[in-house]
Image (cartoon, rainbow, N blue to C red; front, top):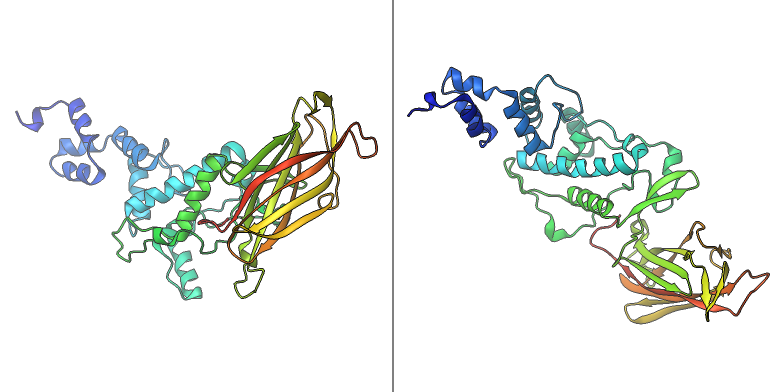
Amino acid sequence: MGLESVGDLAINVILKKLGAEDIARVACASKRFRSSASEDTLWMNLCFHELALTQPQDHLGNLLPSFKECYQTWRGAFSMYPWSLVRRVKRCWDRIQTWLANNFPEAEATLCKGATEADIEELENVLKVKLPLPTRILYRFHNGQEIAKTDLETSTFGSSLGLIDIIPCVPHDLIHLHQEVNSGEQQDAMLLWLEEHGHRLEHGVIKLRDEVNGRSINLFPEEPPFCSTAITNGVKVCASALVIPELIDLQHDFEKYLFAYSIRMSLEPQGCIINGMTFNSCQLHWRHWIIRANDIVVSDVNGEAVIGQFPLLRPGAKEFVYQSCTPLPISSGSIEGSFTFIPGRLAEPKGDPFLATVAHFPLQLPEYIF
């Protein structure tokens, strides 16, 4: 029995198991196969499985008349790049945009349309560099962000999208830059960085924070093992740190690395409980820090307040958050310590002072810097 005697439904089932190149070859065999290969449901299936598209649109979001034209437009627009690499970059952007749409739509609105090949070539000519293929494709999807100056000032360690200037700090052994255009195994620091950023957003390692001027993506980790949490007598203290890449100075004798750390403190719903007695508030009075470079203590700090404030904690109230920094002579260390709290208020103490533990948290130059 020849293929000409096979029903149209069976032909469609067969064609759906083929890739775009093989479908094109089948279409050249006869008028009937050309008609079957033009069925839009066939190309809808390809667009969904290869590009995760549920409607026919190009890479700039413009709607197209059919899924067949959609697929052809995509392949034509990125014909100079390995198709597998284009799909990987699209997956990367899709993860970030989906998270933004669901959690931070005002930041999604700042993403610019993609750059053209002419735009990228002009940039390369001005900079006198040849951009890696993954970076070129990333810019083809989105040519940066359109951010107002006030948005940039929202937070010290975050931005409206959390995408700060990229610096070369990703695992070097993961970077593969093959110059052959047909190589789909390429990955540069920028693509690796953006994929890791999307992973951290999706899994809640970094989260949104409310700021005075609006919301921002907080770059301080909020999940273990990058963040420590301790609860003492109902006082919850979370701590994490990150390196400030712009202030790394390897020529300095003692302050080569500057680490910023974030402390979040709150009172559990049951209040402050000491020796079976419950208090509906407590106020910070004193802090004690032990800062180590590896296992060597480089600083032992005692002092009143934190950043000049004496936060008063109450059940259900907004957590108190502050940030500070410390230098290290090497790229790894740790901080631990305690806060002294007074049940009630400093002006009206209801009981004896107690120590709230700040659990050990690392100061570590990471594989990925954000």
